[in-house]
Image (cartoon, rainbow, N blue to C red):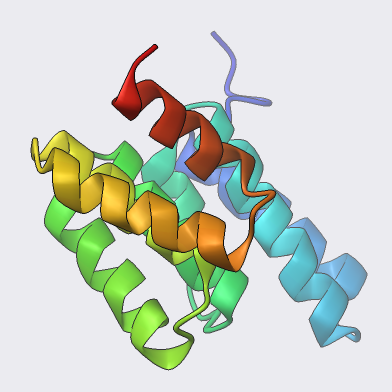
Length: 141
């Protein structure tokens, strides 16, 4: 298989990253958004390591939340928890980080703790679809 568009290939991701830098290098905010979008795509296709590499050097709330998701997807619960908790320490109402902590707790079979996080996320944002669905599933029919 050619790696022309194999998004799990570091070389392909590097080419895309270089193209984003050329296109948006003069506009840092757009460049950041493009890199976060690339990381989101990489995570969606099952390339969490490449997604995290795409976020290298970014220190924004969206990039931190996505980095925690990368660790979660890679099975690194401790890493996901650490990133999410650090983000939450800086911004206590960051629902994305609370959702990650809920998922980490659920994967560790800490159901009560997971539900606490989910309720907290929904108190902050009643329209948090992920938290709503996870809470409904955890509480059963």
